[in-house]
Image (cartoon, one colour):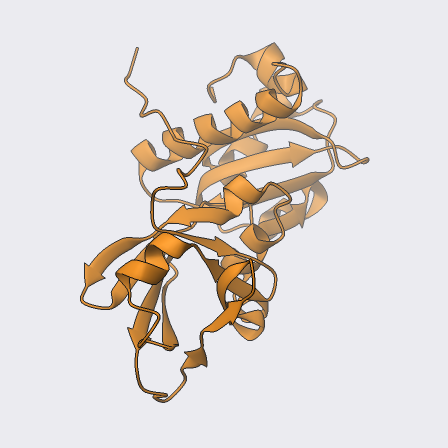
Amino acid sequence: MAWVKFKRLRVSTKEPSIVLNSDRFSYNTIIAKLTEFNKNKFVVYRLDEEQRKIGFEFSAKNVSDAYPIQRVQNKGFRSSAGELVQRNLWIKKVAQLKNLEQRKFIAIEENKNVWVIQLIPAFEYKVKKSEKLSIAAEARGIYRYLDKDGNIVYIGKGIIRGRLSEPTRKDWNFETVEYSIIQSDADQLEWESYWIDKYKESNNGRLPYYNKVAGVQSP
């Protein structure tokens, strides 16, 4: 059996962290101290969509495209991000997650005053089963099937459209496919396992219906 990296579900309060919300980023006191918010009162966002990374370049000056960092009494620090969230589906989908721990990320220092967080793939693309040809034939990643009531009935990985066309799935009862593009096989396995674990955590240890029938791993 292949090794699967254990994916942490929670961030320690002792680590520098950033929380993504629908219209802002929130910073804990650890990163505020490390990045010297007492003098660096502005931030510029940088994006790497392929790697799902957001960079934060902190500055003492109000440079072009910078956002002010505000201190909120008893709630730490924050900066506005409404436009950023709305214009980027891969960010917006994560911001909509109800579980706070899935929107909280450890911030890693990349360079002086530049910190980076990596978002989780959150099934940002959505198509009807009947419209499967709109999915690129070569698209690879993780996906999940939802029934007419929006219940998750399967979580898998691999070539997304190809899996949909497998004869063994012809009679499966679902209407919608949600997916994220991930090229690496190892990353696909990691995130498939992550989302199956999250499903089980919220459903008393049960698997999605067709994962239970077909086995946890994608055939």
